[in-house]
Amino acid sequence: MTFYKYPKEFMLKLIHLYLTGDYSFEKLARQYKIHQSTLKEWVRKYEAFGEAVFHSNFSPRCYTREQKIQAVEDYLSGEYSLLELMKKHQISGRTILMKWVKKYTSHCDIKDSGKGLSKTMTKGRKTTLLERMEIVDFCLKHHKNYQLAAQTYQVSYQQVYQWVKKFELHGEEGLQDRRGRTKSELTTEEKFKLEIKRIERENERLRAENLFFKKVRGNRKEVLLTQVRLQTRYEAIQELHETEHLSIILLCHIAGVSRAAYYKWLKRTPSAREQLNESLLEGIKTLHEQVNGIYGYRRMTITINRYRKMANEPLVNEKRIYRLMKIAKIQAVIRRKRKRYKKSPVQHVAENRLNREFTAEKPNMKWCTDVTELKYGNGKKAYLSAIIDLYDGSIVSYELGHSNNNQLVFKTIRKAIQTLKPDEHPLVHSDRGFQYTSKKYKEIIDEAQLTQSMSRVGQCIDNAPIESFWSKFKCEKYHLNTYDSYQALKQSIDEYIYFYNHFRYQKKLNGLSPLEYRAQAA
Image (cartoon, rainbow, N blue to C red; front, side, top):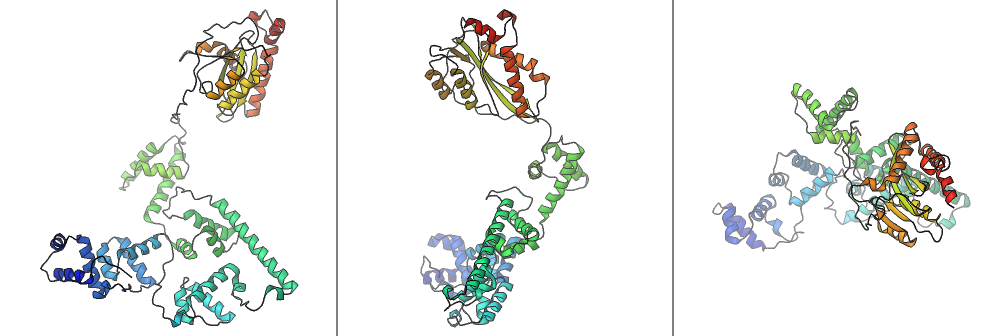
């Protein structure tokens, strides 16, 4: 039912003025202050359906499934304009056509129009089990055309709909007429069998869900060669049906797609663009192997276009090659562009109180701290944070971690603070790394009543003692070995720092090790 803003007589008057040839659309639109597209729509509807189209109780004509598909295919071909298409197929409005197009491109089942049922056809009737099975079989064979099944077997639309749903959920047992017989009347054996069947169906459903969601994780949009929107779901249904012998109906229900859409995908032929993409991808893989993986998407595009130009084929864009290489997870082995990291905001900065005075009169008077990067395995990184005492050069505390984050530095300073006596409050010097300028680090320093000092910008010599220790460690231990695992690297660090503190004798410490020199002071 359609409601119009203008009276019927007014619309018919303008239509007749145009059809007589006295007025053009432009002249009528200007004179009566109506948009030209509105007038064109009125004329088109009048020519297709006559005056009845402007009655408030007018109902559009019914369309068969074949008529709808033909109209959609004409629309997608691009040979007709929207107005020509509606006039050719006698479609009352463009909204109706666009609904059909949306269903078709979304792989939803297009059915006959659901209008035109008489009152006698909507009344249900009593049926036997064999009739119900026959009706369900007829409906499924005709792509779930409930209206056609209701008309053919003289039953109501609702009956057919309910029988099909019960059959899909429970099979033939769902079509049994159990009215008048309650579960209390069943025998113990019958109840036991029903419970076993229910558990088996539930287990099958849970197994199907578990397997399906392993294949299709979440609702994220994945980059694929095909333009089908639910390609991954259809592929998962096909694979699980063939390998695990699961029901198509059950898998489609879990995937949230109709069976008709799945079968339509199964029978579809790849588009010309998909076939070209597959051909390009094969060429990319072959070329990638030939050049030992040194080509990125730019050189790959240049090379492929040279071959296509010699074969008189159209050239391809860099972006297309980039997308195809991304789908196939093909990357160049040459160096990558370094990531640009956003600098953390500086929350606290201290003065350079140490001022390159690298000597101390007693233990735990001046500390220096820093973090260094170490590599192990196949390009993996670890980070070592340490604190050195300027009195004897001993390592007070150290921590090794996978990430250069705040927690690495916080653990190091807390471990060092635990070694202090109540009357010891050393000066702690560091560079201006984001960990040392953070608010939390400042709170830890203040809580222990320590004095904070920081190097000047670009002056790494201000933190020379800890930098000197990194140099000794890497020359005497790290660069002399290779480390296949994180544990091997950690063990090597523990061994060296123990050796450095206890057995690395130094001339400036009178031939003693750092901890021996420290013990003399105590």
